Each structure stands twice: as C-alpha cells, then as structure tokens.
Amino acid sequence: MEGHELDKTSGIEAKERIIKASIELFSQKGYDATRVNDIASAANVNKALIYYYFKNKQDILDFMVRSLLNNAVSITMDYINTNIVDMIKKGYLDIEPDRLHFLDDDAIHMFLQNTYAFYERVVDYAVEHRDVIRILMLESLKSGKHQDSLFHFMDFMVNNEKNPIFKTISNADQDFNYSDEMVLFRFFFTIIPIVSFAAYYDDYKAASSLSDDELKNTFLRVSKIITSSMISGRDILLRSK
Picture 1 (tube, one colour):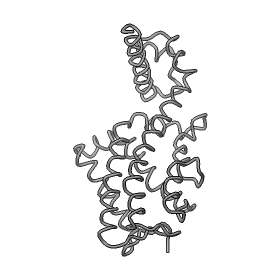
Picture 2 (cartoon, one colour):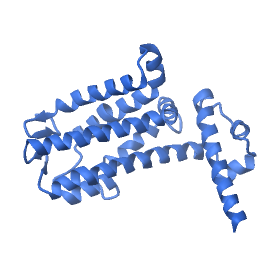
Picture 3 (cartoon, helix red, strand yellow):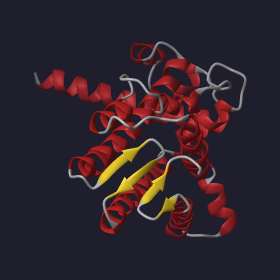
C-alpha cells in the first residue's frame, strides 16, 4: 500500500514537472518550435511517460487552457454565489434587462466592494499564471490550431444551461441574460485587459520601474474608474442608454 501511494505521488510530481517544463519551453521557444523530446529532457523524464499522461504536445497545451479556464470559473462562481445570488435572495439586488438595480446606497456599495475584491483576486491569479497566458496570447495571434484559445472565455458568456455562470444567475433572477453588447464589453474591456496586463506584466514592470504592488494597484485603480462610469444612482448599467 505504501509503495502504491509512493508511486502515485511520484507520478503526480512527474506530471507537474512535465507541465512546468512545457510552460517554460513554450514561453522561450514557442509552441511550434518545442519538441516532445525537449520537454522530456527539461522535465527529466522519458518520452514514454509524457505519452502516458498526454496524447501529444497539443494535449499538453489543451490541459493548460482547461486548467486556466476551470480555475478562473471556480473563482467567478465563488463570487457569484457569495455576492450576486446572495444579494438577489435577500432583496438587495434586482437584475433588470438593461441594469443591475440595488435596494439602497449601502447595497450598491457592498456590491462594489465585493466586486473590487473579486477583480483583485482574478488579477492576482492571472499574474501568477502569466507564463501560460502569454503562451495563449501568442498562439491566438497565429493562424493555427490554437488561435481561438482566448475565445474559450466566451463559452462562459452564453445564454444556455451548459454555462454554469448563466445558469446560476438566471436561476436566481430570470431577467438575467447576456446581450451582445454585454458580451463584447466583458471580453474586450474586462478579459482582454487582464490578459494583456498579465502577458506584459514583467516587461511593463521593467520599463516603468514600478514595484509589484505599485503596478497591480495602479491597474486596479484604473479598473475602478471604468466600473464607476457604469454607475447611475443605484443602478449599474449593462447597456448604453
């Protein structure tokens, strides 16, 4: 039994080394230029072990994309359940077709504070995994198999029951839906800015001479300015007037 557990632990460590080596090589050499042999050498494993865990090199990148998306969705679902759904159930928030309407000033203030904390958590996660995000960004600019990698985020901005984010919010308030305008805004003014920030984080930090805290806090302050532009009284507008 102990030997089996040791083998299992050793296998997990080997898989983690394969992923780590792949991230480093894809970042340095590019996905196309990296060979499975390169990954095996960098991870200090034989090539057969890589094929035990992954079908091919593309499967490794797909695993990175899935892990990134699943963790991002997990963070988002935690925010939705503890903030949006909870406020709807308590009567503090009502979702209307074109806006989020709050019961009073305290309700909108609480919502914004929770939203800022969520946004900071997402930014921290993106920066922590900036090497993977950089790989996806580079691949998305190519006319290859992985050019739609970033657009997988849009799978969680569709109006159907397979989307856990939509299902959870719409079950709490049936007026909720993703308009074309909202999807475009979320992708180009929320997701892409975070992706770009993470991808260029190290380069911008070196060019600006800002510390990690200064750089992140400046980015978060700008995001608050964008959010505040959507506030009208006790409403947060989801569509332009």
